[in-house]
Amino acid sequence: MLPGVDKVLPDRKVEYKKSKQAEKNLEIPPDLTRSSIQDELVIPGAGAPHAATLSQFEKSRPFTGTASVDKGVLPKVENIEVMRDGDQHWLVIKGKPDDIWFQVIEFWQDNGILLEEQDPTVGIIVTGWLENLADISSDFITDTFRRIAGGLYSASTRDQFRVRIENGISPGTTELYLTHRGMQEKIIQDGQGTVERTVWNPREPDPGLEVAMLRRIMVYLGSSDEAAAARLAGAKERQRKPRSRLNQTGDQVSLTVNESFDRSWRLTGVALDRVGFAVEDRNRSEGIYYVRYNDPMRTPEKKGFLSKLVFWNVDEAEIDKESQYWIKLVEGAQATEISVLNAKGVRDNSDTAKRILTLIQEQIR
Image (cartoon, rainbow, N blue to C red; front, side, top):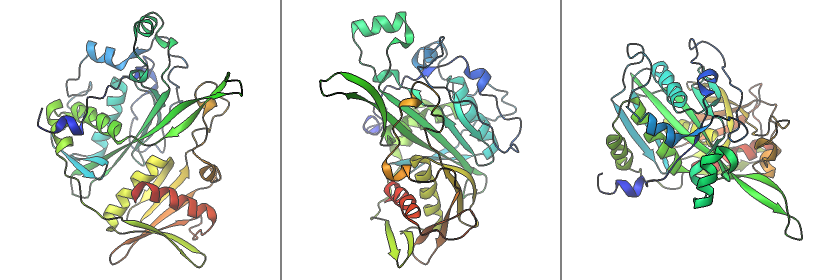
Protein backbone atom coordinates (compact mmCIF):
# COMPACT_ATOMS: atom_id res chain seq x y z
CA MET A 1 0.00 0.00 0.00
CA LEU A 2 1.25 3.49 -0.78
CA PRO A 3 2.63 5.65 2.04
CA GLY A 4 -0.12 7.49 3.84
CA VAL A 5 -2.91 5.40 2.35
CA ASP A 6 -3.58 3.61 5.64
CA LYS A 7 -4.03 6.96 7.39
CA VAL A 8 -6.70 8.13 4.97
CA LEU A 9 -8.29 4.71 4.53
CA PRO A 10 -8.06 3.00 7.93
CA ASP A 11 -8.73 -0.73 7.98
CA ARG A 12 -12.23 -0.28 9.30
CA LYS A 13 -14.26 -3.45 9.47
CA VAL A 14 -17.65 -3.15 7.80
CA GLU A 15 -19.69 -6.33 8.15
CA TYR A 16 -23.29 -5.72 7.12
CA LYS A 17 -25.87 -8.45 7.28
CA LYS A 18 -26.63 -10.06 3.93
CA SER A 19 -30.15 -11.17 3.08
CA LYS A 20 -30.86 -13.90 0.55
CA GLN A 21 -34.13 -12.16 -0.21
CA ALA A 22 -32.24 -9.47 -2.09
CA GLU A 23 -32.30 -11.28 -5.43
CA LYS A 24 -36.09 -11.13 -5.42
CA ASN A 25 -36.51 -7.64 -4.04
CA LEU A 26 -33.80 -5.90 -6.04
CA GLU A 27 -34.99 -6.35 -9.58
CA ILE A 28 -33.18 -4.18 -12.10
CA PRO A 29 -35.52 -1.59 -13.62
CA PRO A 30 -36.52 -2.74 -17.13
CA ASP A 31 -35.80 0.73 -18.48
CA LEU A 32 -34.93 4.20 -17.30
CA THR A 33 -38.33 5.71 -18.05
CA ARG A 34 -40.20 4.42 -15.03
CA SER A 35 -40.97 7.29 -12.69
CA SER A 36 -40.23 5.45 -9.47
CA ILE A 37 -39.30 1.97 -8.36
CA GLN A 38 -39.47 1.30 -4.64
CA ASP A 39 -38.88 -1.86 -2.64
CA GLU A 40 -40.30 -2.48 0.79
CA LEU A 41 -37.92 -1.32 3.51
CA VAL A 42 -36.51 -4.39 5.22
CA ILE A 43 -35.10 -3.75 8.66
CA PRO A 44 -31.90 -5.66 9.38
CA GLY A 45 -32.29 -7.86 12.43
CA ALA A 46 -36.09 -7.89 12.25
CA GLY A 47 -36.28 -10.97 10.07
CA ALA A 48 -34.14 -12.63 7.42
CA PRO A 49 -33.74 -16.03 9.11
CA HIS A 50 -31.17 -17.01 6.49
CA ALA A 51 -29.02 -13.90 6.96
CA ALA A 52 -25.27 -14.11 6.67
CA THR A 53 -22.60 -11.51 7.19
CA LEU A 54 -21.01 -9.63 4.32
CA SER A 55 -17.59 -10.91 5.34
CA GLN A 56 -18.83 -14.51 5.09
CA PHE A 57 -20.27 -13.75 1.68
CA GLU A 58 -17.00 -12.22 0.51
CA LYS A 59 -15.02 -15.26 1.67
CA SER A 60 -17.19 -17.55 -0.43
CA ARG A 61 -17.30 -15.13 -3.35
CA PRO A 62 -14.52 -12.51 -3.23
CA PHE A 63 -14.70 -9.32 -5.24
CA THR A 64 -13.59 -9.82 -8.84
CA GLY A 65 -14.00 -6.23 -9.93
CA THR A 66 -16.77 -7.10 -12.38
CA ALA A 67 -20.53 -7.32 -12.13
CA SER A 68 -22.39 -10.62 -12.42
CA VAL A 69 -24.21 -9.52 -15.56
CA ASP A 70 -23.66 -9.79 -19.29
CA LYS A 71 -20.48 -7.85 -19.98
CA GLY A 72 -21.80 -7.09 -23.46
CA VAL A 73 -24.61 -5.13 -21.82
CA LEU A 74 -22.71 -3.43 -19.02
CA PRO A 75 -19.14 -2.59 -20.05
CA LYS A 76 -16.34 -2.76 -17.52
CA VAL A 77 -15.51 0.67 -16.12
CA GLU A 78 -11.80 1.44 -15.98
CA ASN A 79 -11.53 5.23 -15.98
CA ILE A 80 -12.58 6.45 -12.55
CA GLU A 81 -11.40 9.74 -11.09
CA VAL A 82 -11.79 10.51 -7.39
CA MET A 83 -12.69 14.07 -6.46
CA ARG A 84 -12.51 15.57 -2.99
CA ASP A 85 -13.81 18.69 -1.28
CA GLY A 86 -13.21 18.72 2.46
CA ASP A 87 -14.53 15.43 3.83
CA GLN A 88 -16.64 14.79 0.74
CA HIS A 89 -15.46 12.36 -1.92
CA TRP A 90 -17.21 11.55 -5.17
CA LEU A 91 -16.44 9.70 -8.38
CA VAL A 92 -16.22 10.99 -11.94
CA ILE A 93 -16.60 7.96 -14.18
CA LYS A 94 -16.09 7.74 -17.92
CA GLY A 95 -19.34 6.24 -19.14
CA LYS A 96 -23.07 6.71 -19.51
CA PRO A 97 -25.25 7.28 -16.42
CA ASP A 98 -27.63 4.46 -17.35
CA ASP A 99 -24.73 1.97 -17.61
CA ILE A 100 -23.39 3.07 -14.22
CA TRP A 101 -26.91 2.92 -12.75
CA PHE A 102 -27.35 -0.76 -13.61
CA GLN A 103 -23.92 -1.69 -12.27
CA VAL A 104 -24.49 0.08 -8.96
CA ILE A 105 -27.83 -1.74 -8.59
CA GLU A 106 -25.95 -4.99 -9.22
CA PHE A 107 -23.32 -4.00 -6.64
CA TRP A 108 -25.90 -3.78 -3.86
CA GLN A 109 -27.70 -6.90 -5.08
CA ASP A 110 -24.56 -9.02 -5.24
CA ASN A 111 -23.67 -7.95 -1.70
CA GLY A 112 -27.11 -8.92 -0.40
CA ILE A 113 -28.17 -5.41 0.61
CA LEU A 114 -31.83 -4.56 0.14
CA LEU A 115 -32.86 -1.21 -1.28
CA GLU A 116 -35.50 1.10 0.07
CA GLU A 117 -35.66 3.23 -3.06
CA GLN A 118 -34.63 3.04 -6.71
CA ASP A 119 -35.61 6.05 -8.81
CA PRO A 120 -33.84 6.15 -12.19
CA THR A 121 -35.57 9.39 -13.20
CA VAL A 122 -33.47 11.31 -10.66
CA GLY A 123 -30.65 8.77 -10.32
CA ILE A 124 -31.27 8.01 -6.64
CA ILE A 125 -30.58 4.66 -4.94
CA VAL A 126 -31.19 4.33 -1.18
CA THR A 127 -30.41 1.28 0.94
CA GLY A 128 -32.46 0.12 3.87
CA TRP A 129 -31.11 0.63 7.38
CA LEU A 130 -28.16 -1.73 7.76
CA GLU A 131 -26.78 -3.38 10.87
CA ASN A 132 -22.99 -3.39 11.04
CA LEU A 133 -22.09 -6.57 12.92
CA ALA A 134 -18.54 -5.28 13.34
CA ASP A 135 -19.93 -2.87 15.95
CA ILE A 136 -20.92 -5.77 18.23
CA SER A 137 -18.33 -6.38 20.93
CA SER A 138 -16.34 -9.52 20.28
CA ASP A 139 -15.71 -12.05 23.04
CA PHE A 140 -15.92 -15.82 23.40
CA ILE A 141 -19.54 -15.90 24.56
CA THR A 142 -20.78 -13.40 21.98
CA ASP A 143 -18.93 -15.14 19.15
CA THR A 144 -20.32 -18.52 20.21
CA PHE A 145 -23.91 -17.28 20.31
CA ARG A 146 -23.48 -15.48 16.99
CA ARG A 147 -22.39 -18.75 15.37
CA ILE A 148 -25.32 -20.65 16.87
CA ALA A 149 -28.10 -18.07 16.53
CA GLY A 150 -27.00 -15.48 13.98
CA GLY A 151 -29.35 -12.60 14.89
CA LEU A 152 -29.38 -13.04 18.67
CA TYR A 153 -26.97 -10.19 19.22
CA SER A 154 -27.75 -6.85 17.64
CA ALA A 155 -25.45 -3.92 16.95
CA SER A 156 -26.34 -0.58 18.53
CA THR A 157 -25.87 1.30 15.26
CA ARG A 158 -27.63 1.39 11.91
CA ASP A 159 -26.32 2.81 8.63
CA GLN A 160 -28.06 3.92 5.47
CA PHE A 161 -26.40 4.85 2.18
CA ARG A 162 -27.77 7.02 -0.60
CA VAL A 163 -26.22 7.04 -4.07
CA ARG A 164 -26.93 9.82 -6.55
CA ILE A 165 -25.91 9.39 -10.20
CA GLU A 166 -25.81 12.42 -12.51
CA ASN A 167 -24.48 13.43 -15.90
CA GLY A 168 -20.97 14.75 -15.45
CA ILE A 169 -19.95 18.30 -16.29
CA SER A 170 -17.44 16.92 -18.80
CA PRO A 171 -19.09 15.24 -21.82
CA GLY A 172 -19.11 11.44 -21.67
CA THR A 173 -18.75 11.28 -17.88
CA THR A 174 -20.97 10.34 -14.97
CA GLU A 175 -20.72 11.68 -11.43
CA LEU A 176 -21.48 9.36 -8.52
CA TYR A 177 -22.12 10.71 -5.03
CA LEU A 178 -22.53 8.52 -1.95
CA THR A 179 -23.72 9.83 1.40
CA HIS A 180 -24.19 8.18 4.77
CA ARG A 181 -26.82 8.58 7.46
CA GLY A 182 -26.52 6.85 10.81
CA MET A 183 -28.56 5.99 13.88
CA GLN A 184 -27.38 5.11 17.40
CA GLU A 185 -29.42 3.13 19.91
CA LYS A 186 -29.81 4.73 23.33
CA ILE A 187 -31.03 2.97 26.46
CA ILE A 188 -33.68 4.83 28.49
CA GLN A 189 -33.71 4.05 32.23
CA ASP A 190 -36.11 4.93 35.01
CA GLY A 191 -35.12 6.56 38.29
CA GLN A 192 -34.02 3.23 39.73
CA GLY A 193 -31.75 2.46 36.81
CA THR A 194 -34.07 -0.13 35.29
CA VAL A 195 -34.09 -0.24 31.52
CA GLU A 196 -37.49 0.95 30.28
CA ARG A 197 -36.93 1.06 26.54
CA THR A 198 -34.48 1.95 23.83
CA VAL A 199 -34.71 4.68 21.20
CA TRP A 200 -32.71 5.46 18.09
CA ASN A 201 -31.06 8.86 17.78
CA PRO A 202 -29.27 10.26 14.71
CA ARG A 203 -25.51 10.03 14.33
CA GLU A 204 -23.41 12.43 12.35
CA PRO A 205 -22.70 11.38 8.75
CA ASP A 206 -19.51 9.30 8.74
CA PRO A 207 -17.12 10.33 5.91
CA GLY A 208 -14.98 7.28 6.70
CA LEU A 209 -17.86 4.93 5.95
CA GLU A 210 -18.60 6.87 2.77
CA VAL A 211 -15.00 6.40 1.61
CA ALA A 212 -15.05 2.69 2.53
CA MET A 213 -18.21 2.10 0.50
CA LEU A 214 -16.95 4.17 -2.45
CA ARG A 215 -13.85 1.98 -2.44
CA ARG A 216 -15.97 -1.16 -2.73
CA ILE A 217 -18.00 0.35 -5.55
CA MET A 218 -14.81 1.29 -7.42
CA VAL A 219 -13.57 -2.29 -7.14
CA TYR A 220 -16.90 -3.59 -8.39
CA LEU A 221 -16.77 -1.22 -11.35
CA GLY A 222 -13.39 -2.53 -12.43
CA SER A 223 -10.61 -0.94 -10.35
CA SER A 224 -8.21 -3.09 -8.39
CA ASP A 225 -8.49 -2.68 -4.64
CA GLU A 226 -4.98 -1.21 -4.51
CA ALA A 227 -5.77 1.34 -7.22
CA ALA A 228 -9.05 2.30 -5.55
CA ALA A 229 -7.32 2.80 -2.20
CA ALA A 230 -4.54 4.84 -3.78
CA ARG A 231 -6.93 7.08 -5.71
CA LEU A 232 -9.09 7.76 -2.66
CA ALA A 233 -6.05 8.44 -0.49
CA GLY A 234 -4.42 10.60 -3.15
CA ALA A 235 -7.43 12.81 -3.82
CA LYS A 236 -6.25 16.35 -3.17
CA GLU A 237 -8.21 18.37 -0.66
CA ARG A 238 -9.27 21.75 -1.95
CA GLN A 239 -8.19 24.60 0.29
CA ARG A 240 -11.13 26.81 1.09
CA LYS A 241 -12.37 29.52 3.41
CA PRO A 242 -15.71 29.52 5.24
CA ARG A 243 -18.10 29.53 2.32
CA SER A 244 -21.68 30.09 3.44
CA ARG A 245 -23.75 32.52 5.46
CA LEU A 246 -27.43 32.75 6.29
CA ASN A 247 -29.02 36.07 5.36
CA GLN A 248 -32.09 37.77 6.81
CA THR A 249 -33.01 40.96 4.94
CA GLY A 250 -36.36 42.28 6.05
CA ASP A 251 -38.73 39.35 5.70
CA GLN A 252 -36.56 37.55 3.14
CA VAL A 253 -34.25 34.69 4.10
CA SER A 254 -31.56 33.15 1.90
CA LEU A 255 -28.28 31.27 2.04
CA THR A 256 -25.21 32.68 0.28
CA VAL A 257 -22.56 30.18 -0.81
CA ASN A 258 -19.23 31.69 -1.83
CA GLU A 259 -18.75 29.25 -4.69
CA SER A 260 -19.52 28.96 -8.38
CA PHE A 261 -22.90 27.66 -9.45
CA ASP A 262 -21.50 24.25 -10.44
CA ARG A 263 -19.84 23.71 -7.07
CA SER A 264 -22.81 25.11 -5.16
CA TRP A 265 -25.14 22.80 -7.06
CA ARG A 266 -23.05 19.79 -6.08
CA LEU A 267 -22.69 20.89 -2.46
CA THR A 268 -26.43 21.46 -2.16
CA GLY A 269 -27.21 18.04 -3.61
CA VAL A 270 -24.89 16.30 -1.14
CA ALA A 271 -26.32 18.36 1.74
CA LEU A 272 -29.89 17.38 0.82
CA ASP A 273 -28.85 13.72 0.68
CA ARG A 274 -27.13 13.82 4.06
CA VAL A 275 -29.92 15.68 5.82
CA GLY A 276 -32.60 13.38 4.46
CA PHE A 277 -34.54 15.30 1.83
CA ALA A 278 -36.00 13.12 -0.93
CA VAL A 279 -35.11 14.71 -4.27
CA GLU A 280 -38.15 14.07 -6.46
CA ASP A 281 -36.78 15.94 -9.46
CA ARG A 282 -34.15 18.48 -10.40
CA ASN A 283 -33.60 21.01 -13.16
CA ARG A 284 -29.98 22.08 -13.30
CA SER A 285 -30.55 24.65 -16.05
CA GLU A 286 -33.13 26.37 -13.83
CA GLY A 287 -31.12 25.71 -10.66
CA ILE A 288 -33.96 23.94 -8.83
CA TYR A 289 -34.12 20.84 -6.64
CA TYR A 290 -37.69 19.62 -6.04
CA VAL A 291 -37.70 17.94 -2.63
CA ARG A 292 -39.78 16.52 0.17
CA TYR A 293 -38.52 15.72 3.61
CA ASN A 294 -37.79 12.00 3.92
CA ASP A 295 -39.11 11.15 7.38
CA PRO A 296 -37.48 7.93 8.68
CA MET A 297 -40.62 7.38 10.78
CA ARG A 298 -42.97 7.44 7.81
CA THR A 299 -44.11 3.87 8.64
CA PRO A 300 -44.64 4.11 12.42
CA GLU A 301 -46.90 1.07 12.41
CA LYS A 302 -43.90 -1.15 11.67
CA LYS A 303 -42.46 -2.82 14.73
CA GLY A 304 -38.82 -3.19 15.56
CA PHE A 305 -36.07 -0.75 14.63
CA LEU A 306 -38.15 1.99 12.99
CA SER A 307 -40.75 1.99 15.75
CA LYS A 308 -38.07 3.24 18.14
CA LEU A 309 -36.64 6.00 15.98
CA VAL A 310 -36.47 9.45 17.52
CA PHE A 311 -36.79 12.18 14.92
CA TRP A 312 -33.67 14.15 14.08
CA ASN A 313 -34.51 17.17 16.21
CA VAL A 314 -37.38 19.42 17.17
CA ASP A 315 -36.77 21.93 14.38
CA GLU A 316 -36.75 19.27 11.68
CA ALA A 317 -39.86 17.65 13.12
CA GLU A 318 -41.73 20.88 12.45
CA ILE A 319 -41.02 20.69 8.71
CA ASP A 320 -44.17 19.72 6.82
CA LYS A 321 -43.40 16.33 5.30
CA GLU A 322 -46.45 16.46 3.02
CA SER A 323 -45.32 19.64 1.25
CA GLN A 324 -42.95 19.89 -1.66
CA TYR A 325 -40.22 22.50 -1.48
CA TRP A 326 -38.19 23.99 -4.30
CA ILE A 327 -34.55 24.70 -3.45
CA LYS A 328 -33.58 27.47 -5.87
CA LEU A 329 -29.97 28.37 -6.74
CA VAL A 330 -29.14 31.64 -8.50
CA GLU A 331 -25.60 32.36 -9.68
CA GLY A 332 -24.13 35.76 -8.88
CA ALA A 333 -20.88 37.46 -9.78
CA GLN A 334 -18.87 35.89 -6.94
CA ALA A 335 -21.33 33.69 -5.08
CA THR A 336 -24.51 31.63 -5.40
CA GLU A 337 -27.71 32.47 -3.54
CA ILE A 338 -29.99 29.69 -2.33
CA SER A 339 -33.62 30.28 -1.40
CA VAL A 340 -36.70 28.16 -0.71
CA LEU A 341 -39.85 28.29 -2.85
CA ASN A 342 -43.18 26.62 -2.25
CA ALA A 343 -44.73 24.13 -4.67
CA LYS A 344 -46.22 27.01 -6.70
CA GLY A 345 -42.81 28.57 -7.25
CA VAL A 346 -43.43 31.44 -4.82
CA ARG A 347 -40.60 32.42 -2.50
CA ASP A 348 -41.05 31.04 1.01
CA ASN A 349 -39.65 33.19 3.82
CA SER A 350 -41.31 31.34 6.68
CA ASP A 351 -39.58 29.89 9.72
CA THR A 352 -39.75 26.53 7.95
CA ALA A 353 -37.76 27.93 5.01
CA LYS A 354 -35.15 29.27 7.42
CA ARG A 355 -34.88 25.87 9.12
CA ILE A 356 -34.40 24.16 5.76
CA LEU A 357 -31.63 26.59 4.77
CA THR A 358 -30.02 26.16 8.18
CA LEU A 359 -29.94 22.38 7.72
CA ILE A 360 -28.29 22.81 4.32
CA GLN A 361 -25.79 25.31 5.71
CA GLU A 362 -24.73 22.91 8.45
CA GLN A 363 -23.54 20.50 5.76
CA ILE A 364 -21.73 22.94 3.45
CA ARG A 365 -20.27 25.64 5.68
